[in-house]
Amino acid sequence: MKKILASLLVSSALLSGCANNTISSEKYSGFLHDYSILKKTPDDKDSLASVTPGVDWSKYHSVWIDEVQIITPNADAKTDGKLLLAIANKLQDLIKQEVGKEFSVVEQAGEGTVRVQAAITSVFTSYDDLKGYQYIPIAAAVTGAARASGAESKSVRVMAEGKLLDSVDGQLLAQVVDMKAGGKKQDENSAILLADVQPILEMWAARLADRLSGLRDKAKAKAL
Image (tube, rainbow, N blue to C red; front, side, top):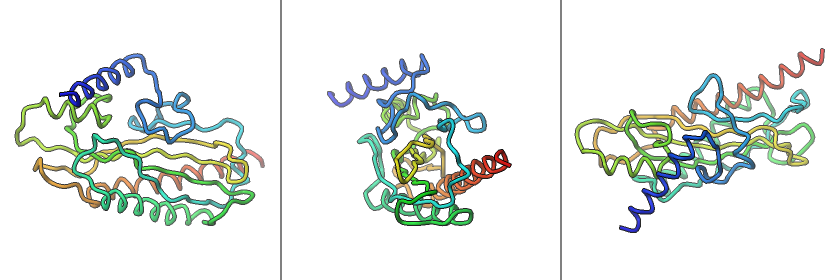
């Protein structure tokens, strides 16, 4: 009963927070430096991001990719340590693969090197017709518990947070929070599989490589 009450209180707080468009660390994992500066991205309604003004992106030619972290709330269901580790490892491998097409991938700090840090912060299932705030895992869990069971399928959802830093002085260059829907689960008891979220991981890695190269190329063109 205490757990249910706590969940309802958290859901209420999430609802009130979304009503005034406040972006605060309480809704997320605490992995990023400053959630208050995040803004909705114009080309992706599920993504929040910020890019530090005045960064000279033209000087970056290498990327140092940290091990992807796992920071998930207790509300996540039907996931286990092996699955989360597989997702984190796959995302790290994909980032190296995609970023390596445009940048040198290194394993230490250095001049002209961007440090990439990412974390998987949620993996859960939920219905597709929820409101935005209900996709935060704890709210999704409460909504799902109150909903009548039936044949309607749920989608697997994965949330990640990431930041780009200057590898030498640690300056925050950019940060992002994103959540995407993956495979469908018709059976309520079906376990989440890596295959359910791999297309999302591939998209994230390709997008990161594209954004990094785009910022660099734009800065170089501006300098000419």
